[in-house]
Amino acid sequence: MAEAINLTPDDVAKLRTDPSTNARVDTARKVARHLSGPLTDSERQLAEEIVRTFMRDAEAQVRAALAHSLKTCPVVPQDVALGLARDVAEVAVPFVQGSAALSDADLIAIIAENGVEAQIAVARRATVSEPVSAALVREGSAEVVAELVDNVGARISDATFGEIAERHGDSAKVAQALAVRPKVPVAIAERIVHNMFDHLWSGLAQRQNLPTDVVSDLVLQAREKATIALFSSEAPRYSVEALVGHLQAHKRLTPSIMLRALCLGDVPFLEASLASLAGIPLENVRRLIEDEGGTGLNRLLQVCGVPDLLLQAFRIAIAIANETGYDGGPNDRERYRSRVAERILTAAEDLMPGSDLDYLISRLAKSP
Image (cartoon, rainbow, N blue to C red):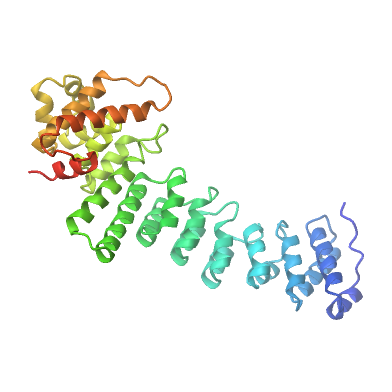
């Protein structure tokens, strides 16, 4: 059983004029601790009256002590909870971030009425519902949204992820948070990558004295590498088929991105891409790739829009993939990439002497 509060109605009156801030802080903490305990109706009524007295205290230090002590109490009277949540940041932020007494409706109102500090406090709560997440994205800045995305306890609907991409697609903070968040829809992740590099292109084109085609090539290389990183890790976050479908729907499933992925050893991405572009079963593509010496592979690549000047590079990379297995040793993927890149460059040296792989792919991919 909770320790008796040991305060009388006369004490409530005295608290209003007590000159000692420290005394009021200590009493506020004591009463707040008891509020969540087993109290009689009269004891609870008295405790709530005292809490309301402290909530109106002129000293922020007293109100902050009250808020800190009440943030773990689930039975805070609504007027007290809302009063603390709308107080100055010193009082409101810890209460908003930790209190279970605030409903979704309360939190949505706080998001609309309060500033960035309170919004960040909501975004950092142990759990955030989908409606509250939607309100944060609708009302909050990129800083607030980045905090929300970084919170694994926040539930975010696909529609809200779409709004994040629409409103904050060029924010580095938001992109960084999305990069490490599990279960971001693949369409949103790729869209963020695309928007980020569109923004980069605009910035480079405006601020740097570089030819437009050079800027375009640099941004294309970086964007395609970032896109490939979504699925090319040892533990990919997305299914290859989902990413391929999204890229094709948005006309970003290009020969250059397929070749880049192939040069990283991601044969499944190439297989899924060719099957999707040609509209044939995946097993048929695999048979054609395994028989790289036949004419069917060239025909398949051409049907899928691969320029003639890139056919040789594709065939060499496919041949290397067929004849080379991962040995499971340290840096195996890096060794594979190096072998593929070296052989592609050697085979294509007569086309563009001295070119690096990035430049070669970007230029050949544009060839008719």
